[in-house]
Each structure stands twice: as structure tokens, then as C-alpha cells.
Image (cartoon, rainbow, N blue to C red; front, top):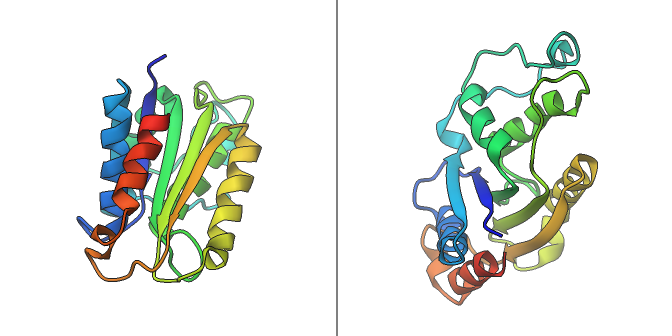
Length: 183
């Protein structure tokens, strides 16, 4: 069955390592016939959750007026969500985390629209040479997927990737494309 996949990237750097990983995953997923959309969270103005809890009242909508409104239709029509980020201080980027924090509005029974997402995946890269340094980011992803009741389809961690273009060394892009093809 063909899926509607949404990729949300967190890097502020255009055509950087994590962006290339996202594109490789997208290429593989499209080869399998899936529809894939990619959003660059760092290019949008998305504020973090303000804990006003207004989304837990009335129609369940977030009251903030920012670019999250552009992301919501794609989120609401996606079957699968793929989060892609560089490792920043042992976590995902702040830009991507702001989007994830806004998922709070979808955790309310009174919300008029809900997420169709059933599956998720995480793709990350960073200069650290051991995956253990990614554990904070991986835990954030796993707890989010578990709470949202998404099936974890996998995690790809590209280590020892720092300077722009480092991802071209080795087989990380091949692995990302194969990951996309496996969905």
C-alpha cells in the first residue's frame, strides 16, 4: 500500500548533511511509489509550545498564529512521519523540537482534526563518532512515537559527520535511500 510520508527536517543549513540524508530517504520512498513531502522546520517561523493549554479547550486548535498552520495540513494527511535532524548538544535541533512540542494540540480528545500518522522514523547525523552520544535525541523520538502510538519503523544514525558534505564520504546516503525503499 502506498503511503503519504511527511519528512520534517531540523537543520538550518541548506543542502547540509541531514538535508542530503532526507533527500536520499525520499528518493528511496518515492521509488517504492510513496508520496513524499518535505518541510524544513528551520525555514519556517514556528514558536515552541507556550503551555497556555488553549488547545485543550474549545476545538482543540492551537491559538498561536505562526507557520505551524502551514505544516498542519501535511501532518493531518500523512500516514508516516520521518524526523531528520543534525545532533545539536546531544539532542535534536531546536527548530524541529519546536514543531514536535506543538503536537500537544493533537493529544486532545476535543480536537476537530486528528493525525492519521501510524508510523514514524528518525534519521540523524552528527560529528560524534559513537551512537551513544545520540541517546538523548533517540529517547525523545522513541517517547514521542510511543506516546503518539506510532509504530517505529527505524532509526538511522550517521556518525562522524560534521562539515558540510561529510555525508558524501562512506555509504550513509546509500543507507538512507535503502531505508526509504524499505518502507
